[in-house]
Amino acid sequence: MKRIDALEIIASNCKDSLIICNIGFPCRELCSVGDRPETFYMLGSMGMSSSIGLGVALAAPHKKVISIDGDGAVLMNLGSLVTIASLDLDNYVLIILDNGAYGSTGSQPTSLSKKGSLCQIASGAGVSYVEEVKEKEELEVALNNIKKGVIVVKIEVGNSQVPLVPYSPEEIKKNFMAAVSQQVQ
Image (cartoon, rainbow, N blue to C red; front, side, top):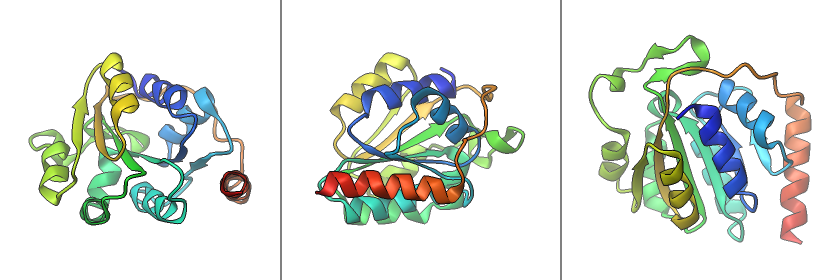
């Protein structure tokens, strides 16, 4: 499955969730298939989507929060998996799009791509629910069943040719905060 296909499935199945999306091509692709104010597009800070999403989930316990990160980004911030496990929030899901590469910087292979498993790392960190999916149908089922935890989505290497996110960082923040505020009231 291509990353853009996985993102389209996430966008269609998670319309009631707040979404924090990893930098680079994942943001661009998600914006092209499912743009909405409830999505916070990361334009910098590789590896921080999981941590920012966790903070949003703490601040908005009434709302399901989904962070979308790449495998390379998660490798830059493995400590977030321990914090996710420790807090064990009922409203937080981390989706890791695992293509075995740093997709936004030239698709260089990650060290983990040769051997190792993000599922085993997340389980070893104590995350209560971890699932790996490879097919579109499996992803849809996982998204409809998961309440909290980590989904590792195995995807192909490659980026779709899509435009840049058309918003400035200030606009993204303002739109996202307004969307969250409206849902709290």
